[in-house]
Image 1 (tube, chains in turn cyan, red):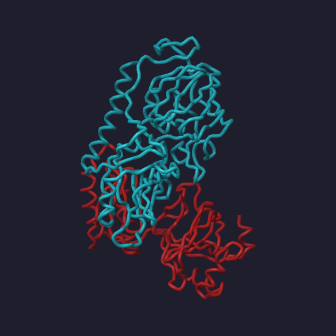
Image 2 (image 1 turned 30 degrees about the vertical axis):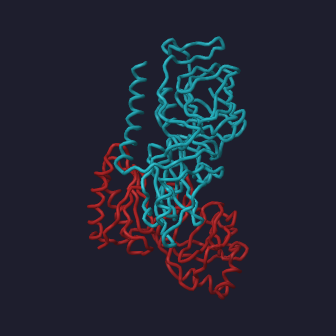
Length: 328
Length: 225
């Protein structure tokens, strides 16, 4: 009742919806970069939304199923195959024993999430299975997945008639239904909704103008902690040292060199850089699906619209859940 | 009374900023507000993150951000009238100031024109307030360092600062809970574990604690249980 990682690809790790409740001790929330896709992958498998899933960054991952299992793949950044059969995303899949899922390049998207029905048996550290490598906690020994890592299923899996799958000759089953794509994946310019940050007023006029009116490229020096942006530099009206205060996913902070960084899932809990903007929480998943080299443009919105957009995503996830429970 | 600035740092996180300066009085207020919220949490409350002069509150979808903001605004006004007696623990931390562990001692000594003994005696002369935990899990930001010990951060951060390193920068002193890159000047090392995920709480120190350093010999450090 397990899978084994044959190749981790660019980077794969075990993640759930994050480690909550320990930020006052400096422990980041972490978890899946694209929490919407991770959630959908679990919903498709009938799991609790917070079950641990495998986050696969871009492509090159190869995983063998040691036993048959139901699974789902949601997100972007790769195409998934068993032999020459392409596996559709956003559907419930039945994977026969000894099948190998391999992922290949896809021009769009950044991360895909593999869930199995019932979830993986991952030891929870401080309430979460999420891998946080800087402290070496979560997932498998607090590190990214490597060749040979085995992840056990929590429960045995049986193909049953009620699943109502389309069965391929290879024995792979695919659900007739699929869930909606809730995360827009783009290879062109990603439009990211953002609100003025707490220190917006401290930046000079040109910087205040540029943040919402120029294009940025996501740098290759980006990781799960943050995305560095290349483009216009930002300057404070008066160079003053800031006293550190809480920061979180979506904060756009500006380094002493004037480069903006968008804090992502593994964002530290406290930071000392001025915050020129913050990304609407509804657009974090879109960013997680935007890869280095892609251009982004910030579109200014207000607090109310930001909340409205965020609530819309929360409602959309609820609707998918209700829709699937009716599918049976 | 301080009128705090209140703003969102996320659609589900609100910051109450009392002051953008480092002061013990403000930090007492931050911790008092944290205790007031945690002892009587609102529906949908997730967690608080205290910083030097601000408290950030995380909330779930169960509750409206606007409602919590206005509630927090009222509560933070009341908190300034609540007794601000500190409830933090008083903790003594053993530190070995041997130059083999306090690798920046020679630089600090020449930069400040102080002997090794003077540095140790100054660093152990006061009780430090833990203002907040952050940077990495379990890293305490403590102050206030005696003025004679103030040094700048390194021009180029070290790629690896060993776990347990006790370091200083500006008016602050801190302890590295894991081997990470860092820019503070290392003057000693403690055998104590600052972050342990198997313990509750996972961080040895909490915001609001009072810390004193106790010098130990290299032998004592090596034999520490």
